Amino acid sequence: MTQTERRLYLIKALGQNDRRFDDYAAEKMTAEEQKRLLRAMMNVWMPQPIDEEYRRIEGAYLKQEIADRGITRLEDLSPMQGALYLWQGDITTLACDAIVNAANSQMLGCFVPLHNCVDNCIHSAAGLSLRYRCYEIMREQGHEEPAGQAKITPGYNLPCQYVLHTVGPIVSGSLNEKHCELLKSCYLSCLKLAEENGCKSIAFCCISTGVFGFPQHKAAQIAVSTVKAYKKTTGSDIKVIFNVFRDDDYQLYHALLTDK
Image (cartoon, rainbow, N blue to C red; front, side):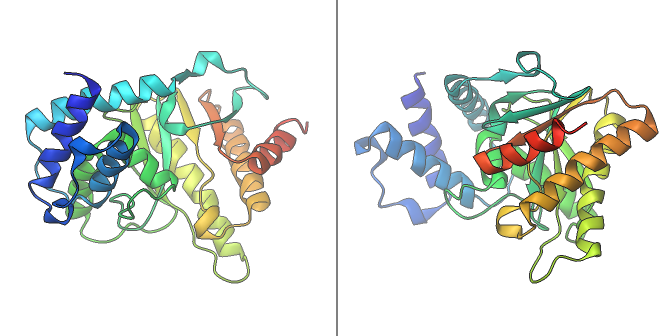
């Protein structure tokens, strides 16, 4: 099957269970319009058992889409300070042992169609199996995920082996010490869980910044200082990539990682 054939198959399969998309004539759309429609359908998909044929075709489609965007491997990067790396780019194209997803307390991904948060991007690139696995974890847990903890899932169609999901603190109003301790706990929980699962490398997104309202500069300081302290106290040799998307975040982390 070509990518177009796979895409149309996936759109048709998802549309069979979601009548909201009945009026969209996917065959008449451009490739870009089809891609946006498929992502929107994946974003609003409610967890349910996944047909194996769908899973197979979705896997082939998503892996090719990621390959076309270009995969960056850990060995392509140069460390800035010890085993600490800084990389600006799309975390869904990063090939390392584990990437970190800044999740919400439902832990099911972002349900807002085409939203550009990291949670939406990761789930859209990994495929429906990621949402379904998160659903199973949360159903077994029986309650929403508290801030500062972490869960682990396979990476499915991503080039990483695992995804670590952590809920950062939401800052509404003034930043306080509890916010800072919870953010620190996010980093520590992810590092510990990654190593418990044999990961030798991990990529962190900028947890709790953006819509969660944590000031970028303070969040970057906590991220770098927490990782450094963890590695020093535990003797861990895990390689840590600080992944940023925005130029101002890159500048913040670059300054912190070049400060001896």
